[in-house]
Length: 120
Image 1 (cartoon, rainbow, N blue to C red):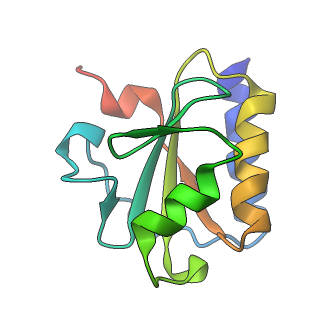
Image 2 (cartoon, rainbow, N blue to C red; image 1 turned 90 degrees about the vertical axis):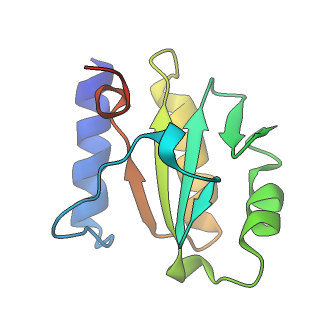
């Protein structure tokens, strides 16, 4: 059920005009040197109340403050955010974080499937 919900969100993002790369880059979160690789930001949702940004754990309320500190002068429209929700994260928790990011002007948001980042 959760996968189906995430697929619906992904479809809605595509239909709303979000930038979707022609050939997506797949990398493990562990391979990123920091939470910000180039103009890609990796967020891991540990729970609906805990979000990992680099080595820092933040909350939805503090996410934008911490994200701006990581990004410096970069504009929201120039940054791609990839979110990896852990299996226990509720749909509602994910949507809250998505809305916070979209309301702040971040439109290039993608979802990382946990199967892509786990050992095969």
